[in-house]
Amino acid sequence: MDIKAQLLQLKEEIKKEVQGIFDEKVLNEIKVKYLGKKGLITSALKSLGSLSPEERKEVGQLANSIKEFLEETLKAKQEEIEKKKLEEILRKERLDISLPAEWFEPSASHPVLTTLKEITEIFKSMGFTVESGPEVEYEDYNFTMLNIPEHHPARDMQDTFYTSNGMLLRTHTSPVQIRSMLKKKPPFAIVAPGRVYRKDMDPTHSPMFHQIEGLMVDKNVSFKDLKGILKIFLENIFGNNIPIRFRPSYFPFTEPSAEVDVGCTVCKGKGCRVCKNTGWLEILGCGMVDPNVFKAVGIDPEEYTGFAFGLGIERIAMLRYQITDIRLLFTNDLRFNLQFRGIE
Ligand code: PHE
Image 1 (cartoon, helix red, strand yellow):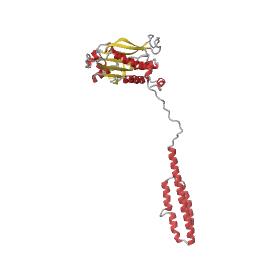
Image 2 (cartoon, protein in one colour):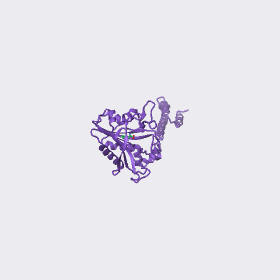
Image 3 (spheres, helix red, strand yellow):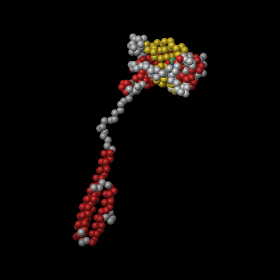
Image 4 (tube, rainbow, N blue to C red):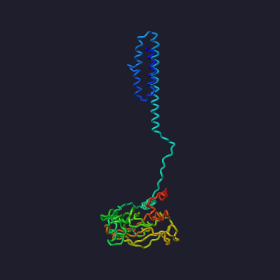
């Protein structure tokens, strides 16, 4: 075969060879095969010397045009490969910004937590600091040092959850009074919110509920101070004109003791199911710290006096949001919980 025919055949070969290739490496190998130092076109150009001048011109032009053709073909193929690569990347990293965003159900703050936070804030604004204590408590702190002697009915197995190692689940937040007085020197004013436990279960009682304890100790603290502080607190929670009354009561750790009622928020004092037709709602227990409690923690009752109070958070929350069954607060039914969206 003469050299012209060879070159033309080469062109056909190149076309075929390049067609199905999508690999840059293979493409490079082809380039070397034809255009490299020992490449087919290169050697064709080298052999021009042995031709006659006319042939040389003709064959030279042909060889050059094939060289160009090859270069263009490879370049086009290279571009095609790059385009494919880019398309592949775009396909894999596809992001449709017109798709609707993922929907998050807005949550709601639990009414017990909302109420607890709000009550705590009111006392903080009056200078009370916030204390806490453990839920698994010593019998001494929960009872004995609070002037509740060993055979007092309040300790009854019916009400108290005891642990196997002789401790108990605190039945009120009052042990935090003991912990604070052991830790601090008067004067101080603290509140202690937290969970408490009692063996109780009906529409108004849950075996776990929340209380907030208050304690102020200083020289010359009087019942008048207690009344003033509680009045400010209750007006903040229930509104300025809420009727308030102090009723004599009994707690082992306070003397004198009182229970505080507010005018029924549901019937405005006329009498209804919620207030059991009395027109009043019992809100909290309070009193002046009993000297026996001071003695138990090493505070001299001749030098210091103090007041304490304790109230149930659930009860306040139920009154504020007109919830009639305490168990609704703890069953985590979203139909209930989500009604408090936006209330904080
Ligand atoms: N600890 C009492 C209770 O749980 C409430 C209380 C606290 C009463 C402080 C007086 C003083 O019922």
